Amino acid sequence: MPRARLLSEGLPVLLALGRPDDALAVSARTLTLLEGRSARPAEVRYRQRRTRYRVALAYLTRGLGGAYLQPLLGPVRDHPDLRQARTLLDDLIAQPVTGSDRDAILLFDMLLSRALADPDPAAALASVDRAVALAAHPYEGARPAPCAPRCCCALPAPPTPWPS
Image (tube, rainbow, N blue to C red; front, top):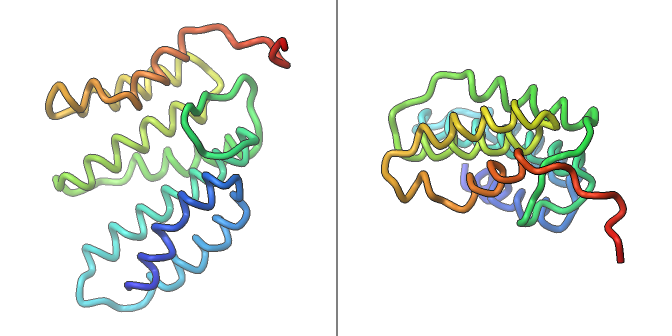
């Protein structure tokens, strides 16, 4: 499992470099490594879920057409990769989770990513609201990550291309 964990932790770097296809290939290898037996099945299930979340992020990144870097604004129009990201995220969000902090944080991040994958501002805002509702304390609810999608959901799309 250490090799799988190392590969999975490198996926966000590939996405930040704007290499979602490479991230998809690495995630497939990671999930294959995680299929083996383990003395820690709960850890393996978490790592599989987190890697599948990162697969959704790869589709999100590719659908948005840029690197996965802040500030990351949601789409102005839909794209097949964004639809795939939403499908994957919806499946992951619907799965039951344990009451652990790391599962709650992962669900929080999935909901925010779901907002970023949706070109419909009302649907995106609903995902942000669901995430913020999970906050266990005021600091979590005030994290910058939920604020950006919440604000952007209410703003009109910028002109394309940006004026120089």
